[in-house]
Image (cartoon, rainbow, N blue to C red):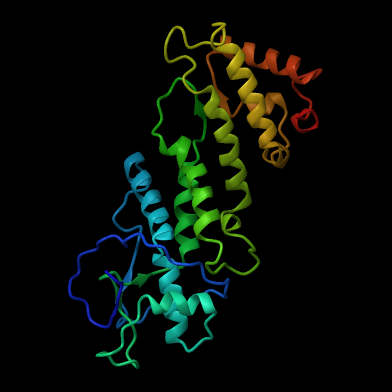
Length: 277
């Protein structure tokens, strides 16, 4: 069923925006978000406690769904239309899938699309509030973490790359991923490296002393560091400072450090890692 813009709500139920295949619109200056009391808005984050694992997971996936399903794309096009701003060809195509003014007053603002009002803030502001919560202050290999801390960041990066390329961006930002502060991005890339070490210490056989564990974990850990060497450089990490960001059993920490020095042909743990990756 085609999506329609509605001046008056038929229901206050906050159903999720259906996924559909909407073409991307050209990058534009972000339209201002109206806060008039006469204009209803939707806070995507309000129903979630992002300080809990479950709340964080549900909120992040809801945000990604809003990006994938075109919720933000459609509302940006609608707001520009309401303000009389020029629309690109792709923006016009997005509106063509929505607008039905045959029995509506064109001078009235659009209040709902699929019974959901416009977002209360730009998409990137909501993303900026949620993403930092994915950071673990200290990655402890023996802990069992919710999957969101392992998979959430990489899935969000893929989502932004595919569905946010043509959404509006804040001043000074040229790509969707860059709406997230640089230090946050690099910290999460490093955390993805630590995931390779996850599980060490959880069970007796999960140790680098085990010949079935050590080879692939050491190799994969070094490889992921190489893939994220820009993040290693950003924090000016040495082997010594890197190890302080992850907590392993003492015996595994010793094996990991010795193995890294040998594999990367480093002389000491104080040398900058970037030069050897």
